[in-house]
Image 1 (cartoon, rainbow, N blue to C red):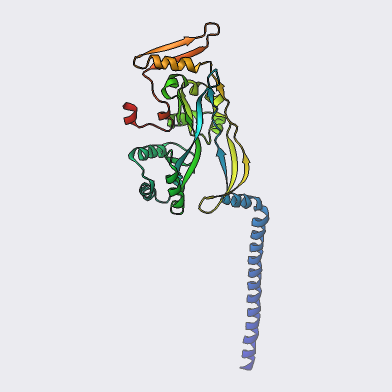
Image 2 (image 1 turned 180 degrees about the horizontal axis):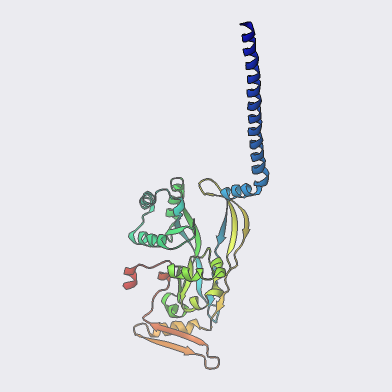
Length: 309
């Protein structure tokens, strides 16, 4: 009996040692795998995860160039860029679009035309996280109201930009043409050329007709870039690097503003057209047609009702 008990205890000790050795080997293997994995992540994939971490807190943003100015032969400014503030939304950052639009409507008022234009812009092909304009030409009070409530409006921002302005209105409309927002058709043409696509990464306006369209490549300029630091809500904290955009070239036309304005005055109450050409050079001194239109109405978009009136 005592011998049997002794044998059982010896067997149990041997079994325990075997199990302990197996467990130790298993633990060592587990720690070895963990150590290898840690080394792999910390050393082999260091650069990859460093880049991912940088991308989480920084962004590369394209900067739109200033459009070139247009002058007449005497140096009189015919097309300029004036500062304007727009209300923009980044759809990917807006949690509830309907509630956000209702909230903004209560803050500063969003009319039916702005809402229709916004819905149309949302349907266009665009780059990820590209802001979509909801309203143009905000007043100082409206800007202050939006900025005070920014905490409750993720994805909403006030963006400062330069927009085209034609000081003489309809007097030069048929010659200068106008710029307008890039639509779906414009974007498809831009996307056909990789270099043109790169140049227009931050651009929202393009020459639609007249001189603005004919000399679009010269007037547009070259896109710039900036690397910015952002927080978890996408708010800008600081600018880390910046490569400024190159403004477009200025144009000096053969037109004489005095003759152009005289032609507009002569046809004020009549239908017709007047063209004045310098015989020696063939340069156009004046070119006016009536009825005319105010190109400023087309820059940020015109409603169907206004267009038909």
